[in-house]
Image (cartoon, rainbow, N blue to C red):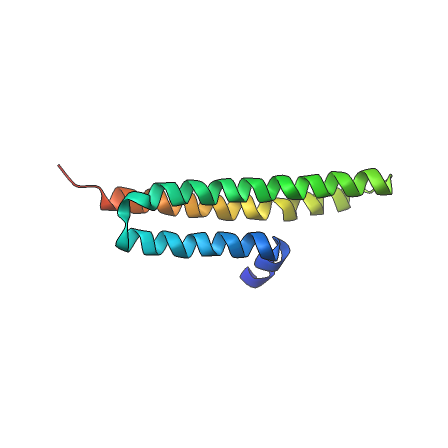
Length: 104
């Protein structure tokens, strides 16, 4: 299931988000000050990849003309995978930042 989501979400964008996730894990260990920034970068990468997918959907609709709502809904589902993955990475970065904060 996870492999199919990775492929469906777009190999380039999902690979980029996975690299950012690995960098987040390394930053939590080596450079804790960068954790939140890497999480924001991952969130923005997911958003940009989603917008790119929406642009492609609109391009196909304008070229093909009449398309069924099922096909459009499937395209929207696929497009939203990257923003969900980017948001998940951002949430992980916030949790790591909370854990790393000094306690009073």
